[in-house]
Length: 210
Image (tube, rainbow, N blue to C red; front, side):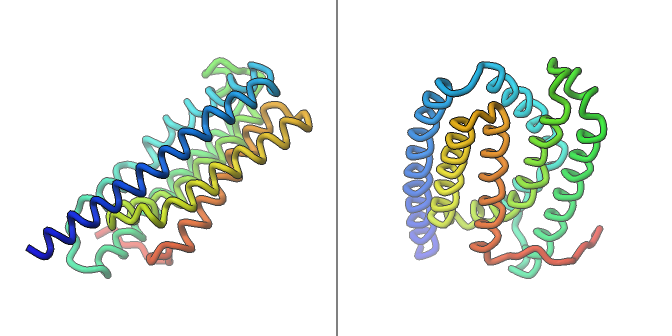
């Protein structure tokens, strides 16, 4: 009975913090879009749409269901959980690095394929988001497993504000779509560093095909 009450309390707390984070993030996002729409040319947002499409497609291969597995699977103990997290981390990170290398090498053909033949190099730089997001995805999954959305809130809000602030400054300076790319990469770096520092589990050099 006490376990059930504890789970209900944790679920209620998780829902509260998750809702608060999403509301604040959703408020910041449209404001930033309205401001940036006045500063940037339409092709800058077209570049972002192209990058989002490529990254989302590549992410499907990189993740391979690792996050859902870590959230839903019943492990023997914490040691078993952390061992599986290490295998998931290195597999996920390795696949994302390989995918980014392929995009970087064949950046012009990829850009042409998605309808922006002149944006090969910016696409390659922007797709650095792949290894950056994969670096923090396992930590994110473990926080979700523990229903610890309170710890996620400051990292999420910091990365969102940094994205907006850095993009705004660079847009004022006339960097065009590069301001959006740099802002996104900066936010991803904050996510990766912040979640790793806060997480009980830290990546270590362990791998087992079993």
